[in-house]
Image 1 (cartoon, rainbow, N blue to C red):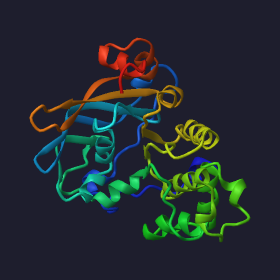
Image 2: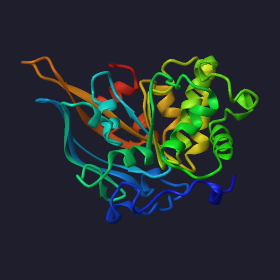
Image 3: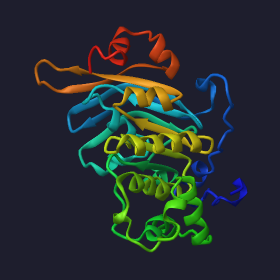
Image 4: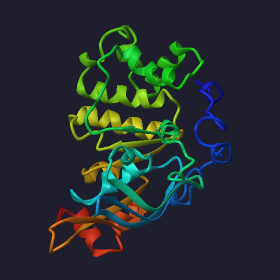
Length: 295
């Protein structure tokens, strides 16, 4: 499907105010250092709280466009919390709040004028456990476009999205069948296709392969490599081999333990090219984690 045939992204009037909605999509530099690609996100001194508890502290980093960025680190270090900040999913938690800034192409996503629903359309998410709707395969894909009021040909959107998710050939003859009848790996690819159907720019993935077998995991990883030419991907993973295989950039987080309250606050230790992180990390804590000495 040629790029011009893809659904046009909404601009002014789409939910983000006119002064902020028409955010340009810069062209990523191909090849070379992935860190040199144009940034999609810039996090400035970002901290996340649940009530009075500080879950993540003072994270600053830039996430490049059309690359795969992996968040790694032990359980409880705030990886998923930080991921959910990138499309304001933490807004759905009453006691959650953020300090600092999350800039998306220079726009502060937490500005009071920014519509979080529009944010989540542009920045989609795939969760750890496949969560297809209890509807047909076709209805799963068309749900988002219908809600967004897309006027395009829904059949074309379904085929394009399923092809992009490497699922079309497996389900094209049973689009009206329940999505619940698919295997776990197929369900996860359906969820990716559902996210792609509203034509986002960014896809966030929270341990998308943790419940899948090695064959299904390999298909998801191949899919990520294929679609990163059109989408920016940020993935949380506990699988070091997976992070090394698929990501261009890698951020290692760890948790500081409060001796008085036994709570854990996530901190960013190191963020660099994946090759560097796994072969020549600058921080001893990173080296200990990626070599399996702790975590």
